[in-house]
Length: 615
Ligand code: G6P
Image (cartoon, rainbow, N blue to C red; front, side, top):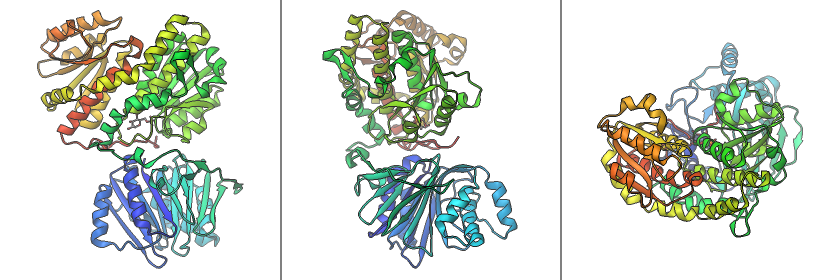
């Protein structure tokens, strides 16, 4: 969480950093700030609120000239969101300025020590403690900024990506990373730093992603020098060529990123298939899997870990892996897995699912599984992300950047990847017939088209949203493959509309949620053709007899549910195990329209962040 941006070079830094902050705002948006340095004076402006509020404040009161600047958009951890707790933070002398993403866990003891030594603090943040610790090291040890950062970081416990500069060193930025992402963009005599590459993509395609426990001193005319924080050894930089383009991170005519990303799903799924699904030839080729297939085939079980929407994708995968490949699967919240004492052996395969590839709990779960000897496979969207590097192997979803905080195309492409893997394993293990395998391949190939058709219900769904926008509660029900879809539908609504919603397996309804049903309660039921269809029909009847309002997602041409439901939304006929890829679409659209009608901030819902790098 928190987005950080920095620039040092020959251009005016403020517009670059401001634009970068807007692109990173998905990472946190309760306050923002920028410090600009022209070699003589530091101009620092920060405020509670969004980057536009900061922009306005700067317009009114802050000169912006200077070729060095750092900026921050915050998701509060220590200290409430207010002007004072916003970053950047000065050291006591006013010479050092820092921005920080992460948490310094032992900040309290360091702060007490510094107070004894005469330091005073204006904010409640751990960050202000860190910048003063660095200042203290400079004074005590008589060292330069880079060395002081290194010494200070060896004293802290926690996670960080930091950018810091010293008034006495106008040509230098010092950055460091542990647990939070940090990319350095390399231009011609200019350098960018940011939490991801989006702030500098129009300036350079060359980037270095710092590894954990690395720091870099970036000098305006001399370039980047990377060292290990612990042992001071020099690191040969690995320069990556970025694939990202500007168009991918702009709204492209849609009102919100979320809607753009919902509509991108047909092409995102195609991109996920590219080179991997060759339906005509009966071939599935998943790069990261090919060399490790026997690990999966011989595994005692697969344990899937993830958080939020990624956990829901894991639940769908549980059905498909067990169904097709006959491998036992368990799905766990990464945050639970890591803190209990899970029984994991070398015979287990752990799949970690993460859109961002940075989620702290998922990362910790990976480390734990590795320490117990398991083979760990990643399913990530962000190329080069920490999780993609920490896992033994993995597959990228290739959904393109997802900027809306509520995950949409990441979810469907995660399911796509996991389905490809399950089918590949099923064919290698011989748990699927040749005929069925080929049918699946052809059906999978048709999914982008079916998603496109599902999107055509948008106007109809908008009209349903108008009717239910003021509902206080929603229930989402589904069975089998569509139980996780019900969970995901409820999560989407909660996240962006702030309406309370619960997802439930339809059969479990009678063990509790049925007590909530009355004439005020909209119940979204996924009632597409499947093995459970008749049972779902019975559940609908149970709801109707208690005067609940049914919004049903049905297979095109359905008449039975149509006669019972108050509102129906059709999706194209699809084999049951692939239905989550299409039934998810109307639920995404329903929550989107309700949130827009309620005037919510769809792309940046309150209290949430896209990438949760705190535990
Ligand atoms: C946050 C996001 C969710 C996401 C979850 C897991 O809560 O707001 O959209 O599903 O983190 O993120 P990951 O990047 O690991 O998939």
